[in-house]
Length: 450
Image 1 (cartoon, rainbow, N blue to C red):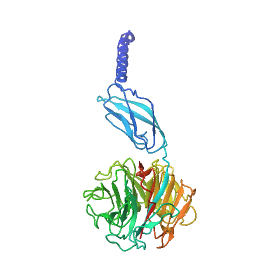
Image 2: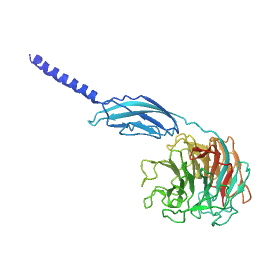
Image 3: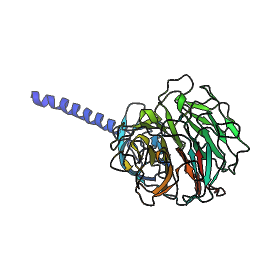
Image 4: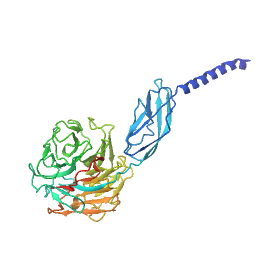
């Protein structure tokens, strides 16, 4: 009888438990969006996570992060961004309610490799200014030179040389062009940016900067690039900071880190800005490369990412002094102290590839470098290197010796170099920060030299 009397109580408790479980299941959001999504490297991506029961927050399990370049908006569930690496990623997406109920689901995102824009190169601009990592060492050429190809066609120079002045160069170490084809070079001794006229003559100069650490001053700057909006980026090496100018007349530049903020850099010497506004920096004496997605941050935050590894083995860098990014957002580094060129798929260091692949011994034979500093990748599939210690420019295809073409030799003569350190390639379609523009009149290759 005791057992029979207890049975209704037991059944009542069981029913209550079942009802409670059922309500819990009903209150948990259920992911209703598709379980797969596709995208392409370099192409903006958007996907919206949806769920039942009006969720108030969305997220991604930290154990299964989104592909590089993507992020989820916590209030809308929109996953967006521009993917930077190809591959398939399985992520766990979540949706939650104000009452604390959480549901999850699986999303498989497949990112295809980017479409490579092909074209032809019609000019190379080279900064022939100072040896290796020592931007204060004396040189002898003090000039910018222009040529049409790697055979030296239409070679010319923009200065007769000299110690500096209104129309002469002292120590040009970097060179680039804007979308109008105007030549800019960076003078590490006079601590200024110089914009020349379109023909590369020595008239019509406009300058920016003076010596110091103030907001519009520079100190032994080493690297420079121009983005698709014609903004000028400077690796202000001696001040251990990055500077962005809206144009050469900017009196209130963006500085990272800002004046008075402790810097994370140690002699940054090269810089590149891609089509998505991401900035890449060769942080030379920290033996690393860094990416920055927001230069307006007062201090390095979530948008500051590094690839670090001092040494000479695979996955390591030794005083990197040049950086470039190709149309697939792969990163190329002039690994100066290791006498080699390095390519990685992204800032994580994935698919680390080196040329030469086996050691860090300097040399001048095919596939060898001696303290390379400047580097640039073009739509034609070629990589161009200012092979500083060998006083020459080299071009090759891929990360092999295919198409290996050297040009130049040590000297002050025409077609000679004395420690070239920076390089910019003009191409059809014309590219700045990997954004295509109408081609500029083919003036040839520009070499900046001391």
